[in-house]
Image 1: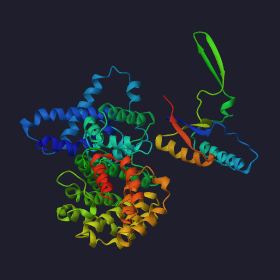
Image 2 (image 1 turned 45 degrees about the vertical axis):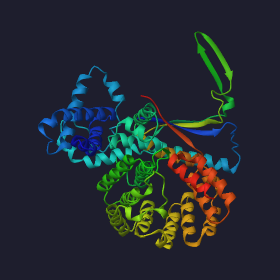
Image 3 (image 1 turned 180 degrees about the vertical axis):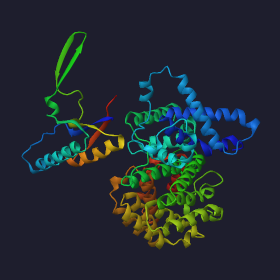
Image 4 (image 1 turned 120 degrees about the horizontal axis):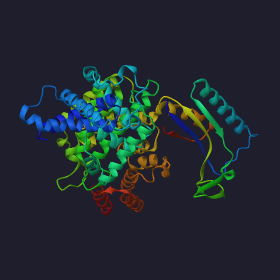
Length: 115
Length: 414
């Protein structure tokens, strides 16, 4: 069955203060969504990510290694977390994406995995 | 179209392609096979005559050609071929591809066309791509023809079509009829795409000709197909009625010198009565189903216009009531704009402008008809300076030269 990446887009300055009621609500919603994914057998794996400012870009080319501080792309929108799901087809993936977006209260992007 | 083969092609290309996509699980392979079959027909039919069931003949021939092609290309690895297939596994089990049982798949041709409509108008595709795919796959139009209709370079259109097909492939889009829970949204996407083709043909958003008849004719043909496929869906009937009733005014929309004529000033004796009576019948028929929708209401509005022998005797009260109904269903600024224009016809420009004032101007700032309508109402209310500014904005946003000439003349008359 095909796999899809559902990623959550955040502003790059997004930092989640888990103590706020808003964050608590989203955490609970995402938890329920994760349970639903697992019960349906669509779950592959998932993770929430630390802010993009915590990223390191690594390049290895011809034996030369360089490491730079910061994310790949200097864009406002950064990936804040993701799910890898396995479902029958695009329509099924989009249905899960609708639920994912509602759970984390923000837009999500759906991309098919190769293979 | 004088060539009878063109006639058959127009009627059958979409149907055959739709069936072959299911059988082959591959859009490109299906298109190539259908093109092969028509090439054979073009060579053979002038000698033998058109067979009694040309669509069946084309489908069978295309299927055989596709099998030949697949055998010839068997050096390609199975994996590569599979990578180019549409996702067949999740299709209804009853419709699994079976190359050797042609009779079975000819029977379900109607479902195939619907499948293809849903695939082309998939919400994961942009409106431009949806329209291009529909015209290419269901309308059987050449990429060059579609590009010319939309006044963009052929290479751009070709790329748009390739990209859309590739997205459907890569995303494992299924070739299926959506389940009942998703059906209303998915149907609406199909209706909206066909209507977009119609409106593009009716008032080209750009270019020198006010109407691009081919697109309108194709949209109406697709609308008829849709009504045949889903006869119990009132919005499909509403969409067809709306297109027919709008089409009925085509002869009077442009003057002999090519300039645009407003609805109020049109010579209504030139309206096509055959289209009006067909559209009327459809409106009555879908209203009877008592499941109102936006296309049915818009068709009903067009029918009220068609009923009026002249602009003065238009039943504006009825039109305003229909716009209110439409707004309740789809509360968006464009509907509010059109309602205000109708209000102005009944109660005068000041009332119309009051309606416009309730719309957030930012929401329609790039919408040419908003500025054109506002300019007209301001002019009628005697607020000439504001009217000129509104005309300037409308002219700035108009890419169709016939429409621009009209607006320039209106502005100059102030």
